[in-house]
Image 1 (tube, helix red, strand yellow):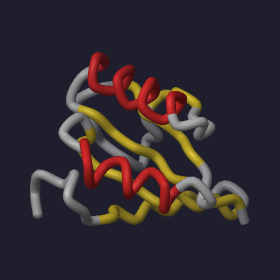
Image 2: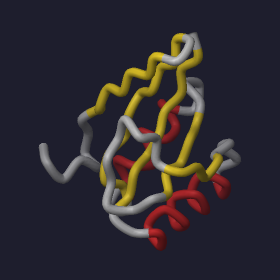
Image 3: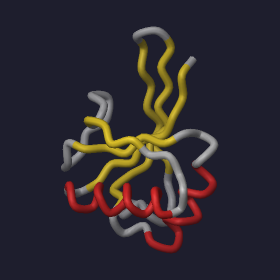
Image 4: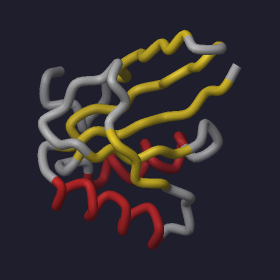
Length: 93
């Protein structure tokens, strides 16, 4: 089973700021199209590993205004599951 995290954003500029923030803290991030299982206002998402999550959460606690949501995605064969995480970056909580 493949598992990773995806951040979604309200705009492309927010996505690019998030990418820069992670890279400035030496965290691996890949910009990808938003997976179909997730809807978003912006078509770009940021993918990062499970190992990076604690560091990403810490960074978002300090400066999480750019992030719409964080999801845990898991792939088992062709089946995809997305679980939304709540946190200080989450405008809905």
